[in-house]
Image (cartoon, rainbow, N blue to C red; front, side, top):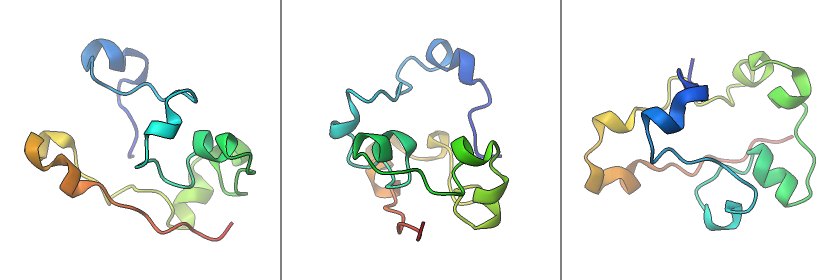
Length: 94
């Protein structure tokens, strides 16, 4: 369901896995506009469908905002082609 299957152990399993932190956010230009970290950094409110507001991903999935079914694992992309697979999603209306 488009989420980390080993979130608590991700750094141990994949040492280069990014730990998203507000301090490094300005360097991460690929972060979607709907990212809670980015919204909070920009002092903007979270949209009504956001899982931190609703308590679940259901509203996000119902509105088609989730990337579920729209992404592939980096395991299937050559390391020299990773940037070709970064998508700038259109910001949904809040």
